[in-house]
Figure (cartoon, rainbow, N blue to C red):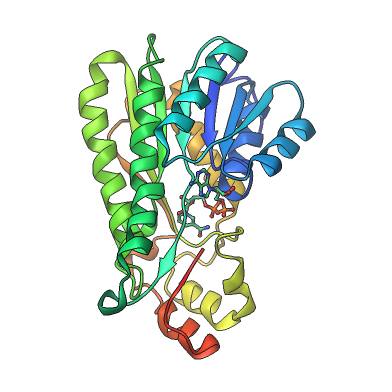
Length: 267
Ligand SMILES: NC(=O)c1ccc[n+]([C@@H]2O[C@H](COP(=O)([O-])OP(=O)(O)OC[C@H]3O[C@@H](n4cnc5c(N)ncnc54)[C@H](O)[C@@H]3O)[C@@H](O)[C@H]2O)c1
C-alpha cells in the first residue's frame, strides 16, 4: 500500500541498510518521505541509497558513538532541511547463559540496543522544533524472557521503558515516542535459525496466529506510528508477534548448543 501520508516529512532510520530497517526505508519513501540511513555498514547503506534514488541519503554511523549520531542528524538537516521522524532500529544480539556472561559482550549489546536509541532520541528531538514521531525497535523479548539472552532481553525491556520516559518528557513539545516489539522475523539477524528448521517450527508452535511476520509487516506498523494517523499514541510498546507473548519463548540456547557444541555466540 502506498500513499502520500508522509509527504514533506524527513526521516532518519538507523540500521536502515538491511532487514526491518531497509523495509521501513522503502515504505517511508513509498509514502512520500525523504530518508537518511545511518548504519555501521556504511558501504551497504550507500549502495541502498544509490539504488533508491534522490529521496534517500546515507552515512556510516555507529549508534553507540554520540559523535556519529550527532553528525547523522546534522547531515540530515543540511541535506533535507529538517527532521520529523526517527526510527531507532539498529540492534544486535548475543547468546550466553547468565553464569557465563562476559561483561564486554553484555556492555556492547547495551551500548548498541539501549544507549544507541537514547542518543538517537536525544539528537532527533533537539531538531524536531515543530514536533515529530520517534519509533524504537524493541522486541517481543522486551516482555518475554529467553534462555541465554539476558543482555538482549534487558536491553529491549529497557527500551520499552525509555519510550515511556521520553514520551513523558517530549509530549509537551509535540514529539511522540513509541516502541515496537516484533516476534520472529526473517532478516540477517535471524537467518541462521532457518538452517535449523526445528527452531522456526518451535516459534510457530508458540504463536497462536499461524501466519508469519515479514519485514514489510513491521514496516507497515512503523509507518503508521510515524504518521499523523497515530497522533494520540505515545509511550506505548506495540507488539507485532502473532500473540506469541501469550505462550512461551523457544530455548534457542539449547538448540544452538546442540548444533554447534558451544553455548555462546553473538551477532
Ligand atoms: N529479526 C527479528 O526477528 C527481530 C525481532 C525483534 C526485534 N528485532 C530487532 O530489529 C532490529 C533490526 O534488526 P533486523 O532483524 O532487521 O536485523 P539486521 O541485521 O538485518 O539489521 C540490523 C542493522 O543494524 C545495523 N547495525 C548493527 N549495529 C549497528 C550499530 N552499532 N550502529 C548502526 N547500525 C548498526 C546492521 O548493520 C544492520 O544493517 C534490531 O534492533 C533487532 O534487535 C528483530
